[in-house]
Amino acid sequence: MHIIFVNPQGNFDNNDSYWTMHPDFGGQLVYVKEIAIAMANLGHKVDIVTRYIDDPDFPEFRGEIDYYDGIKNLRIIRIKSKSNEFLTKELLWGHLDKWTYNIIDFYEKEGSYFDFMTGHYGDGGIACAMLKAKTTIPYSFTGHSLGAQKLDKLGTNMNNIEELDKKYHFTERILAERTAMYNSDLIFVSTEQERDEQYSHPLYKDITNNIQNPLKFVVSPPGANTTVFAPLAGDNISIGFSDVIENIISRDISDKRRNLPFIISASRLDSKKNHLGLVKAFAINKELNEKANLLISVRGIENAFDSYKNVSIDELEILDQIFKIINEYDLFGKITFISINSQTELADTYRYMTKRKSIFALTAMYEPFGLAPIEAMSTGLPAVVTKYGGPSDVLFEDGIEYGVLVDAFDETDIAKGLLKALNNYEFYKTQGMKRVKQKYTWEATAKKYLDAIVNLEETYKDVAINKFFEKPSQKHLDKSFLRNYLIRNN
Ligand code: F6P
Image (cartoon, helix red, strand yellow):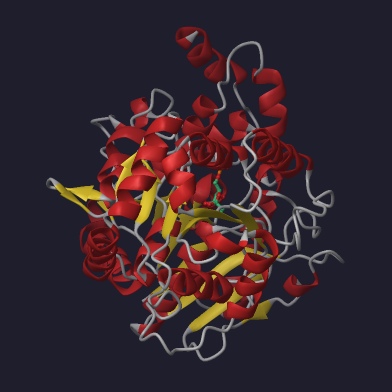
């Protein structure tokens, strides 16, 4: 089969450039790349279709066709859109129509079309809807993160909608998601929670509960790259990144605390990841901060204690607040910051930290799925994770715990959860590793996709196509739609 992954945001290349450095180069790109590779390894012809970018700040993305070293059957295809400069995902909406025409031109020139498309995020989803309108080729939608949840978490109301919509383009995004869902032939979700709660949000409910057009959901959890996030094979194994880790420990952690376990935070500095909740929990619980140190990953900042001024305004604000807590509770000698620049360095850090019986923490206000905890668990770190969103399915099933779930809005509960993981280290380590092996590998994810696509192909003749109710290429964006929801909720 020939399958294309439609992913206009971020970009892809052999070096995984900008991964975790930029908000559009995060978990979604890992997901698309890994499933595409797994499908190609299973013998299918696969293309990742993304934007052509000719921008001095992003020189890696100029070639029209690119490849991953050593992977057969997989191409990265970069297609021109209205503008060739790099654009953040919030600014892509008006650029997709032209892009989809150019995608069609590309395959027409090649002389053969693809059999199926998978669209990623609202932008990839609506692009697939546009492509389907033009070609009738079926597609699946994978939301990754839905606008309605973000809108709610940011506390959007009638007073701030104007300002938030300017920044996040919720109107375009939610309309795109609705259109992508309605016209899709399959919807892939990572957890049942995502299907049952996220997709039945009032802003999508009329579509997801529409009995005339029942949507076909497939639960297909993502996996960890178990080659990269492999556990430590023995105490003597050398870890590439250990010099850097040891340097920052001796630089920032006081002498007598250097052998203590660490609590590791590896998320991007983004307010929704709630670093402040974690630091506050660490600060207020004496038992906790006597038992462990805190390590926070901050990409690109060599020594946060010296200076961190060279970051975005949002990151600066978070770091300022973290340092306020450090000063207020005198956490000097108990906390360190590390600049981690690749998945390999991250995996090395995790492996190094398993030697000290350390734990992983992600206390985000909301996490649609949470690939990061799975990667940490795969190396052998017990995970302490927010109970809001997908992690509640990953870390707990049928009365069995695979990690510790915490209330990210309650610092006392976060501290309690961190202590629980530290005090029951072996139990959570074993449970976490077992869980990843049994349920979360990329090959299993790719097979779920393929099974659903093949089944669909067989029954496809019965599926109603061209059922657009909100024409995807039209610019009519009805502002009252969002506002009515906000009025009802205020
Ligand atoms: O890869 C980054 C990512 O994880 C994507 O899945 C998605 O683009 C984004 O973060 C989350 O989106 P948002 O904050 O816009 O809901």
